[in-house]
Length: 125
Image (cartoon, rainbow, N blue to C red):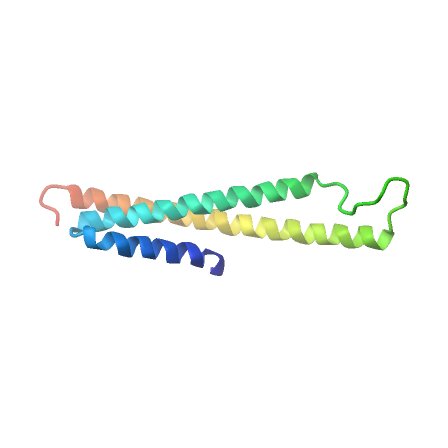
């Protein structure tokens, strides 16, 4: 997903910076988990912003400004309503993508936690 590319690049850079300090499998796994959690927080914030935009759009009952005392142009009103519906569909699609990404990151974090537990057991390494 191209929308997540900046987050992924940022996280890879963070992970690359953390790598020299991470010399054991457990430390590397901890660094990976922190990177996943960081991306998950970023995705959640983006979700909240898009959700706010969607709510504002839903509350906007007059998509066209008409000076008081004037009659709105039907074509302008129809075009504005159509544009509003397109924006709402786009917001819904983005929210679904972000929700899916957030859920996938949660599953990845759970796997990393399980791996950390296994590495923390005595005799594991």
